[in-house]
Length: 57
Picture: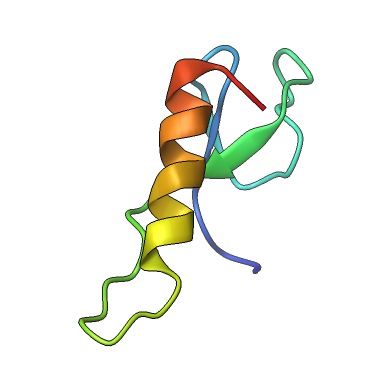
């Protein structure tokens, strides 16, 4: 999605690019995930976020 701020997972720099211009690391969306009370897939996204925080893939 164009026009969204992203954060480098390596150096922490904010950018709008998919690849960090400073260290060439991968970037992730900086904003919070959307929340819905009727979200059927919330459980799976939370599991994925926990894996990312632990460093497991």
